[in-house]
Each structure stands twice: as C-alpha cells, then as structure tokens.
Image: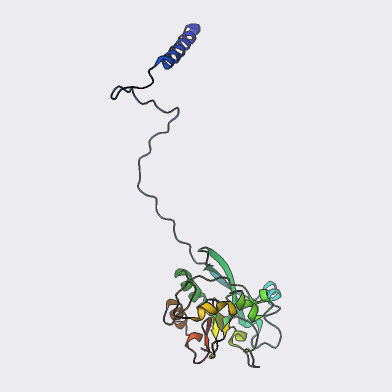
Length: 247
C-alpha cells in the first residue's frame, strides 16, 4: 500500500510538470484559473485600529548633597574662602532636551535653598521642550567662564568675581544660572558680544530655538520662583543670565 501511494504522488507531480510545459503562454480574459495560495500563510489577524502613540519622555531630576565624589569634581569652581560652603550647595542631576531633539542628562550646582525651585523650573523647560546645548559643571572647563560660555554650556555655581571687579558674582553664591550662552549672549552697552560666536543672536528680534525673549515661557518660569532676567538690565544685557537677586 505504501508503494502505491508513493507512485501516485510521483505520477501527480509528473502530470503537473507536463501540464506546465504545454500550458499556453497567455490566457484570454475571464479564463484565468484560481489564484494559487502562497507556500506558507499565517492566520488572519483582525485589525484593532492604529497603535497608540508612545508616551512622551518623562522628566527625571534629583537633588543631592555635595559628597566626596562631587567635591573632587569641583576643584576648580570651589575652594576655601568662597562665600558659601559646600554644605550650602546642592547638585542637581536632570534631564533636558538637546538641539538634536533627544533627551540628555545634565548637572548644575546651586545653593541649597534654591535647589527645589530650580528643579521645578528645569522640569518646566523640559515640558516645553526648550533645547539646552549642554549642562556640565563649569569644572569641565577648569572653572573658566569664558571657555564655558564659548562651549554654549549652561552652568550655575562658580566661585568667581564679576568680570573686571573684586566683587563676588551671583554665581559664587550658587544663585544664578547662565542658559544657552550662545543663543543668549552678553551684550555691552557699546554692542560688544560675548561669546564672539553669539554675534548673530545679538539681534533679539530673531526667533530661533534656545533663544530667550521677554515675557516668554522661560522668563515666566524663572519669574515664578522670584528670579530675575539679565535681559531686563539697563545698559548691558545678559540674555543668558537668571538670578535670585536679579543682578
């Protein structure tokens, strides 16, 4: 019986082969046979409609005391004799949007009393998808403010005087932030722009990602925690600068 079955299968295949060789090259309309099934098929799946959009990224941020490891990374921005001690400072580790449209992790050091409020502002900027080029401790630039702003680095604490004076900067107290310095330069009353690469952004009529403008969501977010904006100064304008004192 097994032999008969085998022969029957072989005969069927042979017949099919012959039919294929002698079949006409084309068929008239309406004479086409049934469409052959694919060699393999999967069960039909009922459509359930479009897939839901992925959830937007959530903001993550935390506040931490300055421990030994962080202290070792702050050897340029803090030293004995600074107007605030390490116990008065806090490290903020936060998510922020970059100009590449991706989420990045950044760090800021601010005075302890302002840390929760600054964290709320950064969460607001994240929700608004405000782009920040980079956010590194100024120690990555050996505490050199000029190098930091030239790199378009957003930073906060830095134990340094106001440029050209012996008076402590608001940054030396951990109560000021410089935000996207290239898009928001310092412009003297005479029109000199710092950093130099920020020249095109001295025109505040321009609208571009990362720029801060009077009355916008960024200015309002800082105003909500009582911080002033350097774009409101008379004479020189510091469009990157936000501080608790407004100076």
